Image (cartoon, rainbow, N blue to C red; front, side, top):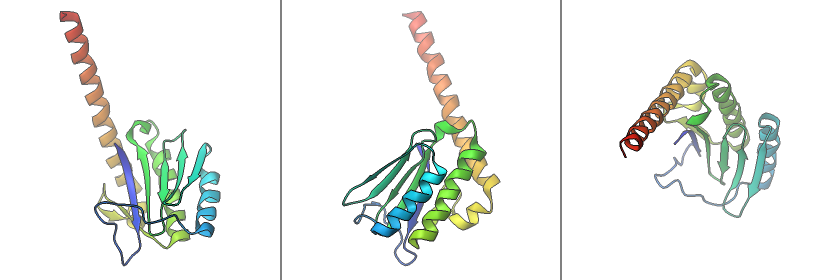
Length: 152
């Protein structure tokens, strides 16, 4: 599970399948990669005929871009520094919107990316609440497994 920002052409919203529609323009991709590398220290880049992708192992942030869509994701396991990770996520989102002309949406808070960027405390709270829910669930499952192991 991850916290996602989605981007599409303003007149062509992202469909439910979210299927790629070809690699991004070469100049746009180069600019995105240059900016992503300035933000993400461990950025690994790949480009296919269908899409371009940037993965950052340190943060878990992943950027995937096609000619008409983009998605930025960050896993919930990185919640120990939520303000930092959300700040990085939205820095990257700003670059995506500027360089691609795509409009972003933050579906977790139900806002356009620009509006969500102005309400980062709300975004951080949404991210943290889900991350904590997953952590509690994992601890509960571990306790249940330990009890079962003790009985067996």
